[in-house]
Image (cartoon, helix red, strand yellow):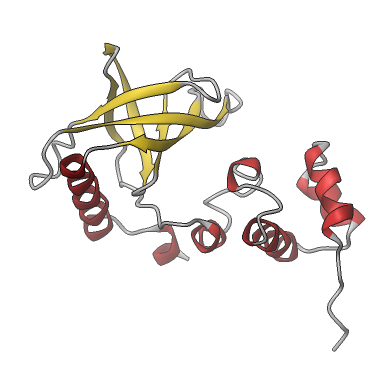
Length: 187
């Protein structure tokens, strides 16, 4: 068995920040995809990089357990995305792709990093969850290629929520986990 290869954060982090792709990083540092995900995990745990800097590098279908391991709170992934509304523009309907007690991933919303939004969730599919609101700030956004998903996707961190609404959010996360197989269960 060969000794573990040591990769210095001072070498790989500048390459990541310059935008070097995963395959380029794997080739340069002689890593497998699992090895690269391990490096990402260690960099996030060491607080050298933030999770939002790696969101587009780690895809859920390929290895969902990696993301769950490095996130502070586990995410719940509904089988069918459900609607979420911007309180300032109730005519537009967006959809929740995943949710945790600290954040939410929304599809269909054109947001900018740093943008603050007050959201309303009416999770009608979950009878035990009452409608609730919270304030959130956009932490990352992507516009996937047309062939993959024509709608933009944004990740929001919950910045302000009342105690009552927080209780509803926790009920929602539990209800989704009970009713939907989560990515780690599909592996």
